[in-house]
Length: 456
Image (cartoon, rainbow, N blue to C red; front, top):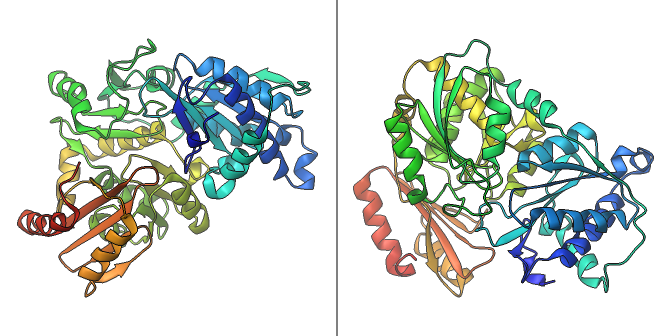
């Protein structure tokens, strides 16, 4: 097993070169030992609390890895509830609905088909990352010399589709107007979940790439604009109210408006602010620090409390719980909800967008238009070996600004700002710049790239 598969937030690598059945067994053993070690005395007396949920995505090797993972868990005496082929947010639902001490989803999310991996969650579906237990699991797994052991734990198969559907659709407003949505599943888990959840509703789905063939027409990453071409075309040809693309494990999404134009996820967060603050006035709303200033402005405008947070689902979920936030949005397309166990859900996000568009009675582009007050570069990547030194240079260059180091370095002026942060896994710096005008944005980008070089 290649130790490099253990990342900041999950386990991920190429099958079978880096991740195989032997490695899956060891991860199962390590995850079960670690997650059960966290249980309190009372929880250890509860049968379900000592169990783990396991689910998988549609990749051709996911089933074999899942079976090996389960055998590793059973070797520790852990009982397993196999919830089958599901989207990742259904794993978060299952852990909470069934009351287990955690769960593992076998998936490589938006990576190409040759990849696979494991997303591990603890009690209440709290994320397990490098700083919250993944290093411990790695230590246990890498120390195992074999994959033998008496499988004293049991395995039970459960289909939670009905309960999950009830949970997702409880957020749908009654008597919504009929709405038409083009959905590109990117040959991922949305191809199974959209028909399961949205059938028999006043929502007409125009399906794209719902098939599971073991291949992706293109990498299942909706943040790459060229991959949105099909849904853009379908929205315009079929006269849809909007379109949506999901990533491979269907925990993230990207929306395009009725004209086929992508809506940046920070603007989508801003669009949802009044909707949630009407439901729960004076609440906290969490957003990641790459988001447009319009997000903070909208939260304050509607009486909420803005909370700016580091990039990454582990930080966002912790911030949500700590502040009892009503919802949160991340530029990557993750959206988090207090009434979804403080976890993210692309399907619930789709429900809320349907509610908003249906009630507004105007095209979604009209809802977004007032929020497009700034010019933004989008996230740009630069190859930099000494990332820390380069960030220090930027902080020094703009030392007369408001500077903070919550995640990388953020520089803020009245009419423009930037964030420059390091990649966790590559020799890259990620830069985002926003300004009050297109001209100022171009000026500042030219100024900054003189220090960083050309983006890759």
